[in-house]
Image (cartoon, rainbow, N blue to C red; front, side):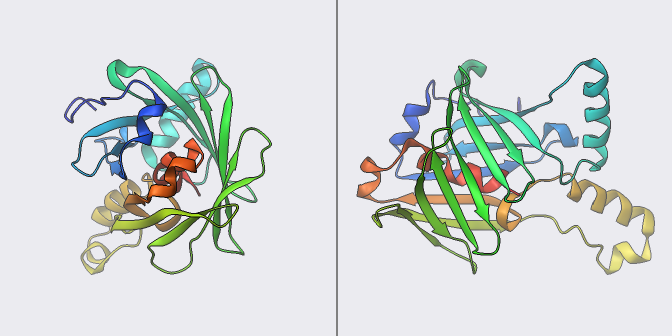
Length: 227
């Protein structure tokens, strides 16, 4: 992340201020350097993710090997959300389960909530706390923007996907040169781009956001991290 502006916020509470929040995927030269940034409407980097692993030295080596080749596609994704001076604002775990979920905890390990992707119903649901009820819901059918509403029906904004990611299918040139196809499609498969495989998710919030759970501010990032 050294070639981009450093994150500027020091707490998750700072995410309550911007009316527009953008989760932007930033590709690294190698797969385990891929990350997301959270930015405001002016492009100021507020926070950035960093992938982590779970396990000892042997598992770290295996994790690095499969991550670099894209062989970890579909595996659970763990990481941290970093603020200014690399302070850990939150941790996250994206689980490719039934249903797919992304759980977020603060720096002390207290679970703030999770997103749940209801695939048959084509909804993304936010649940507050470790075992909390539904806090916000948005339909994710179609191309968006998708309205974001609290459990009581109050609309607090809209989420839109933007900038399609690299295709994981070879094009005509790659079919003619298989080695080129292998390199490019393998690299594309290392990119985990969320519910619509795009490089940006944009949340535009309304005045009612003042009454919304803090987890709503993380919605564009959750969309990018979710399976």
